[in-house]
Image (cartoon, rainbow, N blue to C red):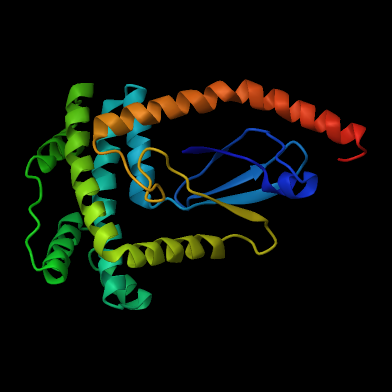
Length: 260
């Protein structure tokens, strides 16, 4: 996965943005390590949750025409969203991180049990049954277990089913457990920060653009989210040449002023 990030050390040094576009990779830890043309090295921590990153990975794969990869990432995002929801429910019930981690280890490789845990926590918390989509496992099993190659239309339909479940549950959590959601996100961010060498400068990014809990409102359906994400990517990549020109102008100005 990739992220476009500015150098915050340049911002501190120059007193204004350098406008240098820096493309950096990030992986499981959701931390990107960047180095700008002035030699500053720093870490960018993504606030995004695992399911948000996987949703964006699915969107990227779909836009590039890789339907198997898109369907697989959507399936993984679906499962990791239930893990996130379980964390929020446990935070609501004042369960310690240690107790949660020890319990989750027992179901970490069994997605069906994780979903079962979510269903019962939903029932206990809200007093009502949550009905899962019965159509989601059908394509998921065909792709993952049978090597089925779906069409883009099938992946979009699959994405819509998953997106609607994530969207509806997210809206419920935001309306009833907004504080607990934020605590889970901040705890995750703190965990990421602790893995970075203490001497490394760091900054935080909201991360994913396709679906982000940091946004005031999420797109209501998969089609709209995909179209919006595609437009956003085009704007970002289209602005890169202009940012490079601005960066050169800033560098020249700094030299003329006797700066770095």
